Image 1 (cartoon, helix red, strand yellow):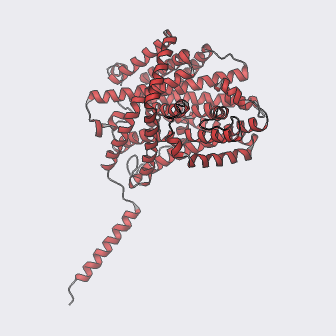
Image 2 (image 1 turned 180 degrees about the horizontal axis):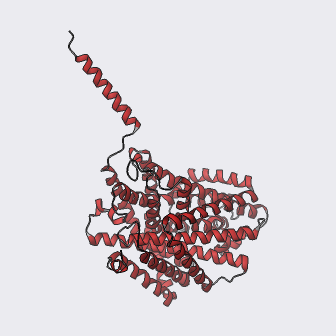
Image 3 (image 1 turned 90 degrees about the vertical axis):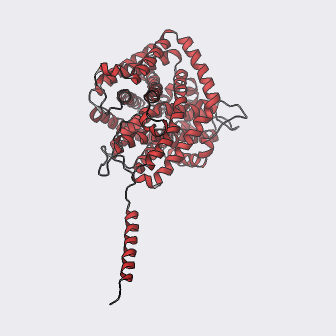
Length: 523
């Protein structure tokens, strides 16, 4: 597809124009932009927070039921297809595209924020009970609920692309419900693109904020908008180099590097930190997470008027819903050849397990030192969440080496996310092509960088949160319809013959043969 053909695609022109206009407004009138964004944030959370919570809970139940059903044996591809990527590479790609930046950003910041200001309890802040609640809620926010959102979109797209040999557009997956009218399909795809851009911009912005905080901690670089825009520019140049290598080389190798750095950093802090305390925190956190799963999933505060759920759980779910067209499409692209059961359990168990252990290691180490060593990591985080990880490194050996490794990890996550995001956005705006034109990827790389810069310039972290929350509102409705469409698609598919089916077939055949022998006339 040439660039002129791309310009004639309404999905590309409408979504790219809207993102460009928003970027320019954010930079030209930042105060007004921030004011409008704040009003939209308030209206959305006050009126639709319940919808985010209920929808995500339903997604979890649906996917787990689907995995254990007969449909779990359906392969995402032909029956003789096998996975394109090995398990380690596959998990690395899931981790990098799905939530790597967010996990590094919030791994210390979230538990220490809850530790400093304990939600839904009269227990004293910065106490042992506050630490327990902080860890349990961190596990919940980064567990299966988050990945169920990615799983719904990814499964629908993978099924269409590799089982039905159709394009991987969200609108195509919705055809069993919405029909195939061009205007409807183009509107759905445009909403998916805009939601994706806002979700990616939020993640990119978080990574840039943390990079600036890390550079300040290690090298004394000032924390300001100019430095953050410079970081965005460097990431964009690195992304261009990576994107020219394609999915099989650039993103693949960066994902392996990401996973390796994660393991190195995780192992180092685990061994240098309070190892037994970390393991105890991990087990206790899992227990609290599992025992409170339903209560946390559906918790609202209509009687007390608390804003905590809005600022944390609702924001997280909106963020992942906004990000889901990109992550879902990317997860689908790297999951060809796996069965639905493998896909669901791989997506909903492995990354959440890594995330929970990450929080136990990093958040647990920070909690241990504040509880037992008199450090004040929680206070530092309450002042500036972007320095949370580097405040932790200050109380560990090899501070500079750990900080440099973390900065490298954040950089590779940023590059991988920008690369894979531009790839998927290029595909979404070029008819679902598995090989989108380089011109489309470049345009989206520029626009993602621009909107992230505009949001940082207009309001920092709050503006990033607002962008995700508002963009996710129409898409959460689309996702509910997508779930219903997926049910119809699966019901229309030919189920694979399982070993148990073959055993029942042989039993019936043997009984019929015996009946025939009994009916033979005796001579």
